[in-house]
Length: 125
Image 1 (spheres, rainbow, N blue to C red):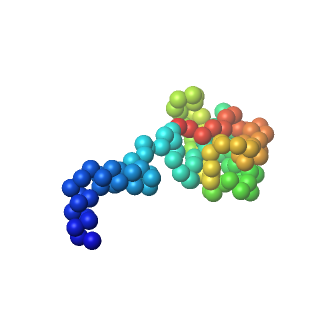
Image 2 (cartoon, rainbow, N blue to C red):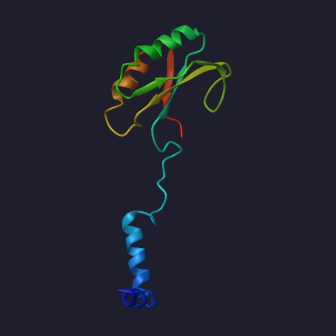
Image 3 (cartoon, rainbow, N blue to C red):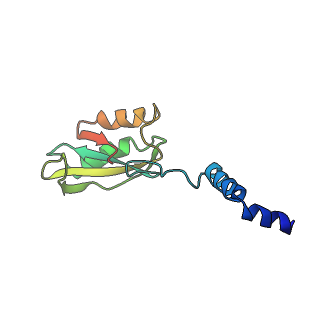
């Protein structure tokens, strides 16, 4: 058996075999592009309309907390400003089990968007 290994190591067969096995195992695959959120918990950002209380914002999120995608609900942060947000814009994060890949998240998004205090809901990059 030792002589077989030396024969294999001396030829290009072993190198080719090793590269093939690594490719099959996924070791040589290119990194997966995932736009910054590669695995759960995924962060769903909720932006609230100006002039609403933190209590109203919290109530809107907790109304939707029973959805099976929800892992946990973050606290309302105020004031917040950033890309696409005005000064003093309240935001919060809902941590979810998956990102939009089908119809599973439709009930959660519909629940959040139906609240009069919610302005926007999105999974940020």
